[in-house]
Length: 319
Ligand code: R7I
Ligand code: MG
Ligand code: MG
Ligand code: MG
Image (cartoon, rainbow, N blue to C red; front, side, top):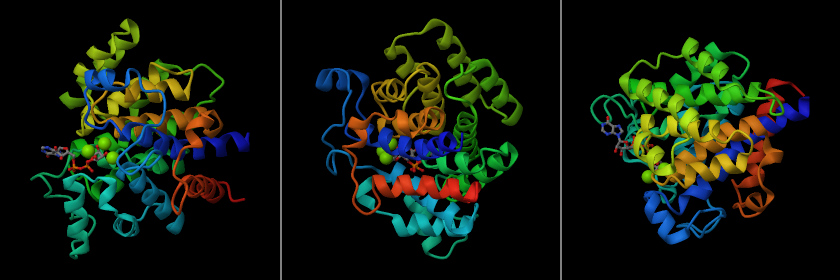
């Protein structure tokens, strides 16, 4: 039982890493471009920083986990500092995130730094792609989870949609942690859970959840999913797509992540977010070994990220 839960903690973090890494090589490709060049992606590809390397999605997820561990919970100032310390522009950051972090470096508080990015704050997916450790850490208290996810978004993504997207992703990871992976996952219960905790009435999100409900009955082709659900760097065009990729492929971590990536678009990020949810549900031991064996493992690589998951578990279940 304990081992199972620990495996789910690690699965959410390493799932982010695996999905990010699998998608990295084709970020920005359309579904047709992927088909023309690779057919159906099933393996780690050669990528910008080499096969098995991660991008900003994982680098920021590491910062979230490091900070939760360092202060035993959420602290905005500390988390912002972790992002700044870890920042490696070669990993490929969004312009809004760079701007917010530069504002903090220049002395603006973490609560203010993201507010004027793009006018009203960013609704990019940058605060959702990294949020898995918050879903993990606060999985046993959804109200607290919500509050901390929202605050963690504020550091770089202060737009209401940015905060809602990160909260939606974090709640989904937390919920997946709490479902036994050997029982049947009830989509209906999950959607009820969401509607009780989160106001998804903004037209951007409500439209996507209507589509998700339809799709789970109709199973449309990938072209339609990519076109209507979307897969780009805006949070409302990527978190729902990740949730659908998980829900439509409940049986296997592998199938969910490959489904997400082969849609094209913001593949590293939709891959990372699907990987976080599927990893939280299935656990680390269900992540294919041929993928794990290919991941970068120097300094802050696979072993380091596994260790972050272990330490989060030890903190919460004091052992
Ligand atoms: O969200 P963010 O960190 O970017 C994450 C993406 C992922 O795909 C990563 O893998 C990495 O490649 O980058 O960075 P932001 O720049 O805050 O947001 C991403 C994009 O969303 C922006 O570049 C804009 O195109 C769009 N966007 C907005 N557009 C108009 N108005 C975000 N907020 C706005 C807005 O308010
Ligand atoms: Mg990225
Ligand atoms: Mg990008
Ligand atoms: Mg991306």
